[in-house]
Length: 311
Image (cartoon, rainbow, N blue to C red; front, side, top):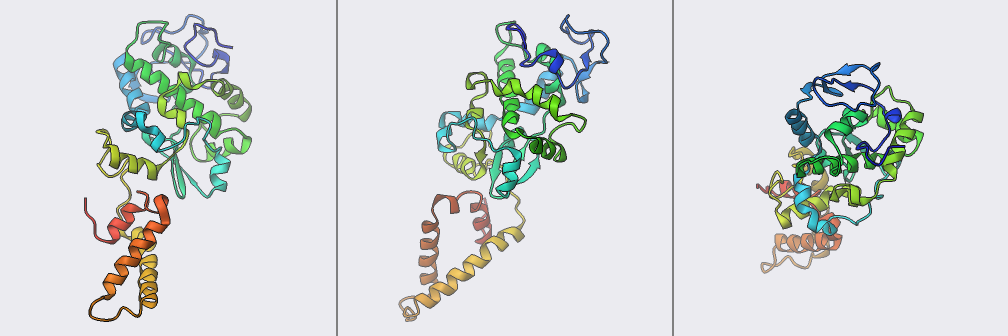
């Protein structure tokens, strides 16, 4: 068990990465044994030194989700407040979703129709020293709001993995998809992650209170609330702009609506009503009847491309 004064959520013996931060680069915990391999860089990142400024920049790249931070007051628009709303990896497969590894923190736990984006665990988050030195508790030392934000985001990120990997099958899927280091064993992982399962919402970043988030709703939130950190005014995540998938998705339904409109409104063949008038009416009725999800931004860019929309 960790002590009340320890910054790391897990104890030294449960750490999955045992490397010791070099004492000439960082003030390492005095309780650590001298027999472990010493390193002078961030665990898993040889190109990043242990200088505080370098580590801080690295953590920002690994953890910051600026657009989500701006949307925090309006999260009820994009999801329900339930931090356990994260399907285990095997359930993601059952639901027909492909697991897509990504190093983009803003896409972690974001899903769409046939895929879910998941950020692999940085090796440093498996290291006891790293938490003690660079992700300390606020009451242990005088630290800035930035360091507090990094800690809350890191704990929320790690807690999400306690939901994603609950069974041995989830563990196997995580390693197959490069979400975990390949040398880890199921038993040691289970012991390590158990401490994060007990962490409540008060200790994590706000958006981790909502579990996995649907990309279509995030796209709508960006369009309505216009967070400055979003890549565009239309999308939370810029979609693939190849016209082929758009045409595949929309050409069939558009042709069907055209033929259905022509057949059901055959009486409108006079000069007063053109075929396009009928088609426009049926197309509008079709999309309205499909509701919010069918008109969501996951499909909107495809419809926009099909009709020649340009941002």
